[in-house]
Length: 238
Image (cartoon, rainbow, N blue to C red; front, side):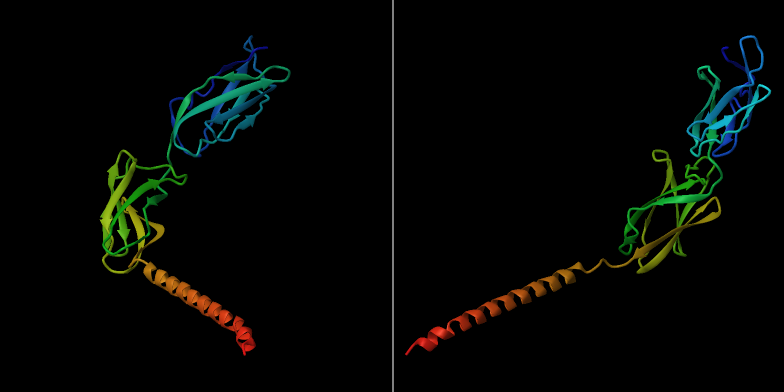
């Protein structure tokens, strides 16, 4: 008999959930005569999260799928199948999946080794535990370079992140990078190296000297071989 469905997910319709959180809803399967169907297998899925397969002996199926790890609009999909009957797929609702709590800061910086006082443009994005951007509700993002330099980040809606433009310290050395989001300190596990560029010209000079020495050695060796080859001819002369 055909499946119909009642009392589906009205308890979560129009609601918002947090990423990776369990979502509880129940559904009742009825046949065309409104009798409970107890021999079906029901599959529940929220977006691209893992599927949940449930059975029931009463006709009431309780599903507890997990929300996806990525925030955004989420389609709730439910399908059911009875033995010797084709699969029935039910069109369902959409949930709003919200990011979780602030868990860290992602830093995008062109280079971690710069010259003293060089211009640096860093991009900071507050994220939850699943790397979902968290910008709504954030009021202050500060990049800390070493112990002295604090650079406020300016929100850029085009990239949905905060941009911190600053001049590197004038002193040569290594500077730890941290971020402060609404008063919470986050270690970025990065170090900005400020120093003079590597003296590649010394490498080039050294390589040129080696090549010149090899060339001279080759010419001298060749000259000696030529001199030795003429000795028998000189000896044969009266």
